[in-house]
Image 1 (cartoon, rainbow, N blue to C red):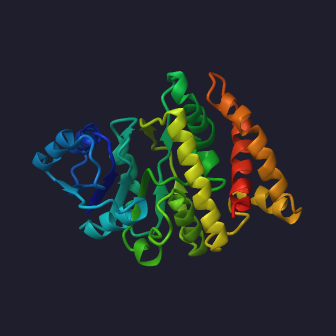
Image 2 (cartoon, rainbow, N blue to C red):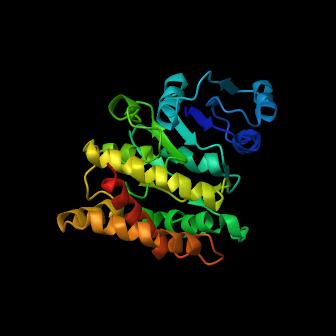
Length: 298
């Protein structure tokens, strides 16, 4: 019999609509399940989320201190009582009423990871959230057949099914700074261990669009996290496109030069990225230049 643990880390987000949608989704499936929600010591939406304690088959806990994205996912996996785990971010919502049942055919004896995908609303958001929306639609919301061509690099951790035994071989790395790219390292380690990732058409909508300032701040943090992964040889330089380009720049001894150019023109790039017509090409130039800048800092 299929049995499922649905695991949701939450930080400053109202996760009640997601839990209620999942429970409605699972009513007609008739499988044993649990939904475990860990609040990573966030302070917002406490009153709304505390209502989860009254819901059937739901465990809601507030952690005493913020432990970060990697550790909280590992902790959720340890808490789960069933062998198949469905990880969902708190700021998503299923796109259809068959979301759970569409995952069920993949709950079998084969140990693997199954990624359902992500979608963004077709409705254009306000200007301050445009960059994140355009990036998400162009770079993340890819059809499953396109994702399948590069199964590891196309993997995101906001909507995936995984067998619990995989965490005995590959868990989220808790030693890296809590600065993002934990999903990159996780997928890279899965690839190293030759654990297959299946891509299917079972997406969720991503609701939590960052404002421009938050998006740039998070991207800067992500680039610092990427530098840490590269410096400690945790991923190969050719795993990501940006690190491949950086490696070429490094071989040509142009890192300092590109870093200086970035300092001179970053305000112009920021102006475009904050506009009503942000360019992903300029965004890529900004990211590459910022990574070079990080390597010029003493």
